[in-house]
Image (cartoon, rainbow, N blue to C red):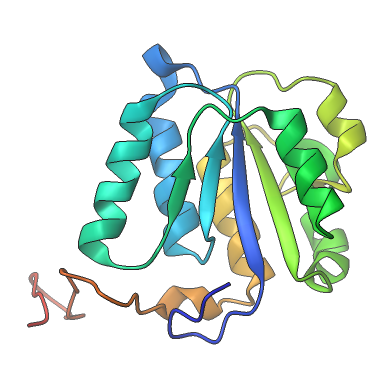
Length: 181
């Protein structure tokens, strides 16, 4: 991971599965934005939706950093290439082992691909993943699962990331809205 101001050393990317362009556009965009804001380098989209790519890259262009989106990626090939390059694959699912039980071992790896599904994921994913991780065992949003997982993976260090080359920067304030010059 490029140092975006927090000393991050892990390479973390997201593989988004099951995206249905007519139905999941907003959620998939938020998966990408969450991943970017919390330290991931990019997102592989296992669907053809150029609008998602354009939207997220537009945000990265204005708010800084080098977040990428690869569109229409073959998910099996993506996983196999990631693993062949020494990375591990973490599938976020409510059926996995509790995140609190598995996160310490996952933190030992420098290269992590996080699989985030939309609709029902192919059953092959459970066997291909090195870790099937449950953020909770209750139904909730893949966005919240990803946010909590990344926060725990980076020990909270990404909450104060500063992105290089940002055209827009927020100046934190108790009330109102301010941008830094």
